[in-house]
Length: 169
Image (cartoon, rainbow, N blue to C red; front, side, top):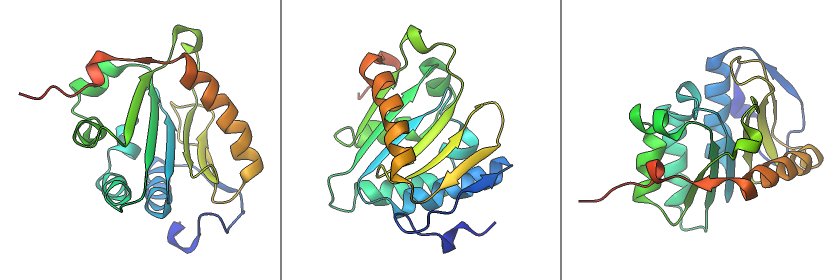
């Protein structure tokens, strides 16, 4: 599917995704169109989606654009993410004023969804993070408001994890 024809904040069509490659491409396009905020919930910061070169380049573009970007990420297993050498962890270390990564509190240990929300306008949402069936929408403020409330609840109870702080020598 060609996602580049959709515009964040304009196209309100609900799109159903079925594969990791569709999720990867959609996430990269949304991040590339981001003006200010990216919020992510992902158990292991899904490397097929969030460690792709296109997604990482879009994040770099956002944080070097001169705008006051904010990237907030909630994960569940920071040790594994760090051990696997995720590029976002390195990027967060290099650009720490733009990133904050928290470990989900125990209260949410059974939460198994995955979410990418961009500018509180568009979202990529998987109800089961183990599968790649997802809902994508480039413009649905009402749904994003509900997703943001869920994100905020998790965020406020989340904890900074020492594994996610980059050590400088």
